[in-house]
Image 1 (cartoon, rainbow, N blue to C red):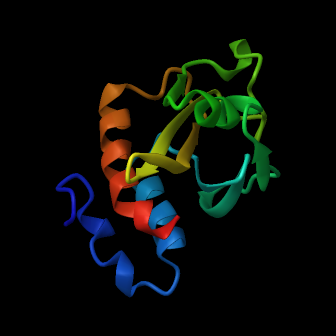
Image 2 (spheres, one colour; image 1 turned 120 degrees about the vertical axis):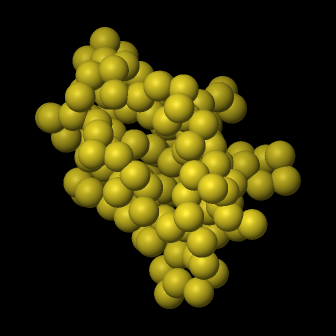
Amino acid sequence: MTDPGWPALEGLEREPDPLRRAAEVIRAGSPRYTGVYLYALRDRELVLRAHAGRPTPHLRIPVGRGVCGRAAATGAHQVVADVASDPDYLACSAETRSECVVLVRRDGEVVGQIDIDSDLPHAFDQDDVRRLEAAARLIAPYL
């Protein structure tokens, strides 16, 4: 079932690379999203599976390290309005000003996350989080 907030994610099962397609669709969801990174949780490490937008040097992130690792360690989404003020922030780009991490769950267990960067401070709000939670439900089978 496709969430009405993401009609472009319908049919991911027919895509040759469903996670890459999902990253592209999510990035196109807002001009504020400069980088979208889809990580799978493997053991105690987040592993980059797909991205759209700017590349990242962070192909693997230990749980507990950075904003992404903090989300995995705490089991809670993270919205960082100003990355310069967050001591856990791991820079992907010098232009990034804010970050949003939404966990992906399957059968109640965290299996990965959607990580989004923006060049705008305070770029993310609860509407973004709700929309990304809907996207997370749609991509969960592929992580």
